[in-house]
Amino acid sequence: MRAKREYRNREGTEVAVLDALVDRTEDGMTVFELRAAVEVDIDELEDALSTLKADDLIVVESGSETVIKPAERVVPDQSAGEDDEQSIGEWLRERLPF
Image 1 (cartoon, helix red, strand yellow):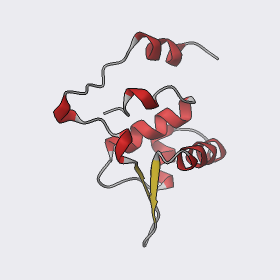
Image 2 (image 1 turned 180 degrees about the vertical axis):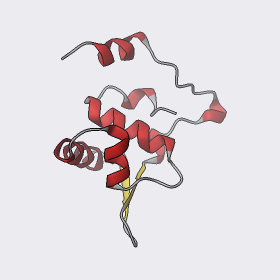
Image 3 (image 1 turned 90 degrees about the horizontal axis):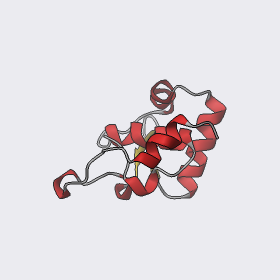
Image 4 (image 1 turned 120 degrees about the vertical axis):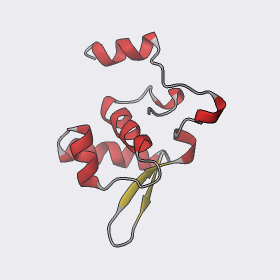
């Protein structure tokens, strides 16, 4: 599953993090799991997480281990028919180097 369309016009790592988190909405992910899923270096991941946290797009839960989850507003509502079909603009953004 992918993050809602309105949150896809962000830096590539941020979108990749949101998509990975949306796939694991209930359980969330640790930083190590995110790093493996997104496949970026730790500094780039840290920058993306910092920006997403500042924009209130992720929730950080501390316990025996720190778990990161997507904010509810980022997760598409499948019952409302929101699809994860890619728009032409999204397709171009992923393929063109900026």
